[in-house]
Image 1: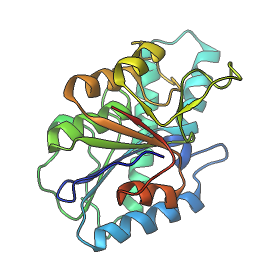
Image 2 (image 1 turned 30 degrees about the vertical axis):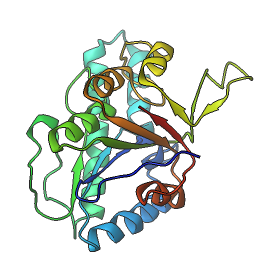
Image 3 (image 1 turned 180 degrees about the horizontal axis):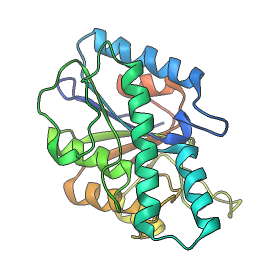
Length: 234
């Protein structure tokens, strides 16, 4: 299993897939309680945490509905996804009200170096950029060299496991190999372990990404520098 050393003086950057926050049927209160326990624990110890949240099934339902009625531009579809991320962001800011900066960050190029509280919540920015990309831009702004990407998959595979029964989970993958596998295009509602545009940004700026599932025990191991279940993209 891979290990990663997060510098304690740096904020923890968590890119939380909307699929964990809002799976089918609405927000997952059980997952949110677990996330609250984990993040609040670090906040009480004085550790800063940045959470960037995706749109989840809310975004996909709206995007799919629009596509079924008319041919819709990618920009309009993207905006629906962005607003879904901002709704989820407001949900998280409400949950972390005790520790959170009062404003949900919508522009990763204007992240304050210092903010009120220990938790900073961010959401979607503008068409063409995913919340994965937002998380990486924030990491670059704050001088953080590792982003944690938690979603509904535990590993990056060397092929699509839904299409290739021989696909193998990878403990580590180089950016150049991952980018060859996922391509370079971004589409609204795209479902990949980590989005292609964000991947290019991380490759260029030498930012590592730990891809993990939503298990909090595993996530805590990662944060504390222990062996964890997941894939390191570097």
